Length: 60
Image (cartoon, rainbow, N blue to C red; front, side):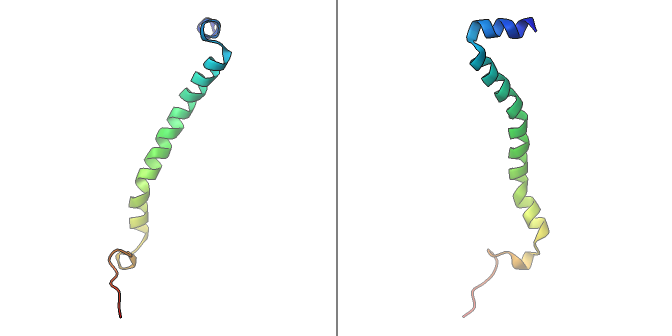
């Protein structure tokens, strides 16, 4: 607790709150990045290969 009070005295309350929130959100951002990177793999696994629009040939 003394560390927090020392930080508040040195840099101010808004700065301490900002650092705390950035620290908390960092883990959530890492999880979000991993989820977004996994999306192409999930979509490929869910769709049959025939329905891949890149592999369809235009007829006509």
